[in-house]
Length: 261
Image (cartoon, rainbow, N blue to C red; front, side, top):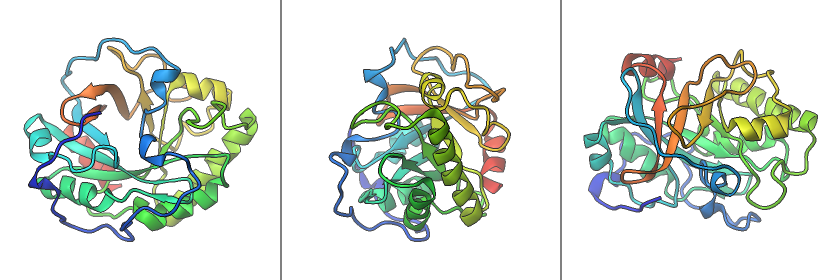
């Protein structure tokens, strides 16, 4: 993931309870944990997809990128951005406000995501921490639904030492708490392989939670059980400017409708 700098990190509209700095953390290396950071150790990548009609280009960023060149991304037709807000219940991205508001100032629709560590604390507890520190949602047409990042454990066994039933319960607790606090069902980011291994390919969330599938290949591939389509697709980790690039599965007007709720 590349690091860039320019003046596009000036703040715009400040989200509610945006984190100001990183908290002291029992998580060993949260700065190395971003959306998709664990995939290379577990899944093979293929050549990235080429742009397709009927989709909208987006990116996801974390403190790993630092200052982001939003102008360059805008000129490459990027129209939405997700920013890491929190991890577990101890880490707050110190670059969150500048990244979140930098995307807003450039005209992008933006949202926040939480990197889950289910072995550290309960799903509801992590959801509360996330919502308090950048993960809230506003009915302003510019704020995308909150995202739960469920991927391989960067610190141990891939499924965080949980049984499939325990993992499904943890995700449900997180999702239910986010919905009760924000009014939105969180988007679930995952890979089909992780989902099959760690939830038993649960179909419990497909009717409510939009799917963000990660697969670095020419297509999203097979989806987890229950989801008939994906909402977002992370298709590469080596894209222009920031590394992680994504596609919204629909038009810009449909993306704006998703933000509106």
